[in-house]
Length: 113
Length: 120
Image (cartoon, rainbow over all chains, first blue to last red; front, side):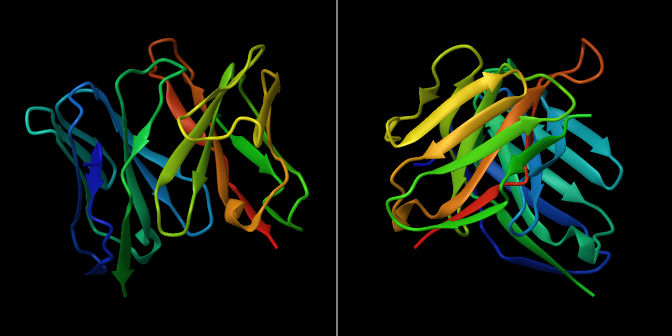
C-alpha cells in the first residue's frame, strides 16, 4: 500500500465548476500538508500548505485537512481553463529544512470551455 | 522571493556520457536541496538530499556512484548523471526549502522548472 493515495484522473469539468481533489494517507506521522500544481513539463508550483485540521482558504482555493480520517482535499471554485494541470498532494512529518516530502501520484485536471 | 532555477532545461546525450544538472536558489540561501526524478505520468520520487558542506544522503535504491551530488555553495547544488543510459531518461527536478519573509513562516519547498534528460 502506498503511503499517499491519489486518484490519477483525468478529471474533466466545465468552466466555472467547483473542483474537488482528494488524497488519503496511511502514515499518521504526517503533520504538514501541501498542494502543488504542475503544468506539463514544468516544475511543481506551491498552491497551498497547512499543518492543522480544518480549512484554509486562499482566493479560489480551499485546502481541507481531516487528520482523524487521514484525508485531505483541495477545492477550486469557479474553475478556469488555465487551471488545467496536474495537482499533486504532498505531505511531511515535520517542517524543518531537512523535511522530506511524500507525494501522491497527481490528479490531471482538464477544465473545458 | 523563493525562486529556484535549473540548467539546462533540456539535454540530449549519447549513452555512456555524463551529464551535469545545476540547481540554484536565486534569492535565498539553501543549506539543503532535494533532487527528484519524475517519469511520464508518475509522481515525483525523491532521489537524494543535498547538504551544503557535507555528503548527500541518498534514498534507498538510488546508486550514489551513478548520481553524484555536490552542494558547492549555499545557492548551488549539482547532480551529475554518470555513464548515462537510456533508462536514465527522465525529468529531474530540484527543490529547496525557504522559510519566507518572517521568522514565523513555515519552511516550504520551492521547486525548480525541471531538466528533461534524454539518453540516446
